Length: 397
Ligand SMILES: Nc1ncnc2c1ncn2[C@@H]1O[C@H](COP(=O)(O)OP(=O)(O)OP(=O)(O)O)[C@@H](O)[C@H]1O
Ligand SMILES: [Mg+2]
Image (tube, rainbow, N blue to C red; front, side):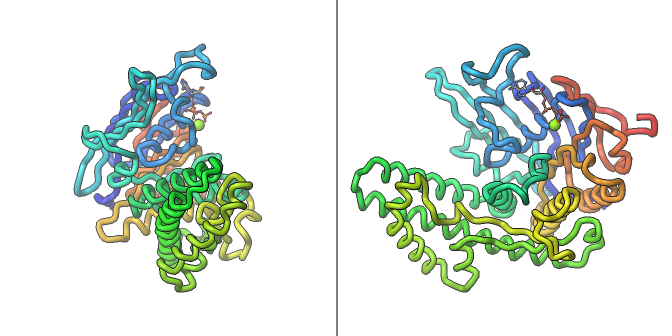
């Protein structure tokens, strides 16, 4: 059954984006399978889509690395190259053309540009009003093992899809933290400037922490719902480990927590100055996950189990998004997902994607792994610089 409400891309255009000079891909609502050799440009294509949301995309790459370089032209010491991505994106009610890129003014100054339906927007959070994307890449296989910052970013990105203002609050919070650090380091005993920055920090910090608390509670409700997929994609127990989040959960009012954080910031100025960063706050929050059935911390689970837990979270997030009034499920970018799953899990994932009507963009070097999709997906061959529509994988692929 097709769900008309979900987000889908109908045309994606890349201009001077990594290995692509100019490329266009036309798609319908179905999941997209991209097949190509190593280095063909599959992940680049997913990265382009990931940049249609706020943030630095699925490689967290500096924007001056992304512009297309002709073969043989190195990256070091060369000037930044402009690039652009645009996409026609639709859900049931609307269709928009979203664009983003890196533009270089004649003065040589380079900056990110964002357009919605041709109109320039002041910042990338405008994209979050029309677009939501969630990705799983091989790098995220280590999400539960690596440090807290990757998990926090993963959580915040999930929230962007539910609450577009979350991305502008996270940005405002981080910017004010950096500004405070500069004032501290400048040695200027400018109390009123610091007080005003700390107020901005605390207001945004509490809003960010509150959005996380609410989202984790909603996602947990969704995870708790009965679902046949849970044998293969296990349930996770999630918990937020952050001092403001803890206070908000224990029924302190937002204003109380704001006052508490303002006091902490003020008291910690000397320590933060010598540490070179604020030591305390929601920029240090962690998202802990546990394999529920095994009562095992996610980081102690096997590689395949951790992957299955992540998929379970991503599917629960899509269900949650869709269940909300007029909610549309995000686009999924699943880089090399099939290679990591046994056949039973692979087919269960394909079933879940098809049943929810998600436009998942999946890559692989081997088309045979995607046979389970049959006509329920659309297939493309990726060759250096080109994307070619292809028939579904037959037995002989
Ligand atoms: N700025 C750039 N300009 C030109 N080419 C680039 C740029 N950045 C990366 N590339 C090249 O893009 C090519 C394709 O990379 P990509 O990661 O998309 O491949 P892939 O199809 O995902 O391969 P794999 O199967 O190995 O994951 C690489 O050969 C890389 O060197
Ligand atoms: Mg790749």
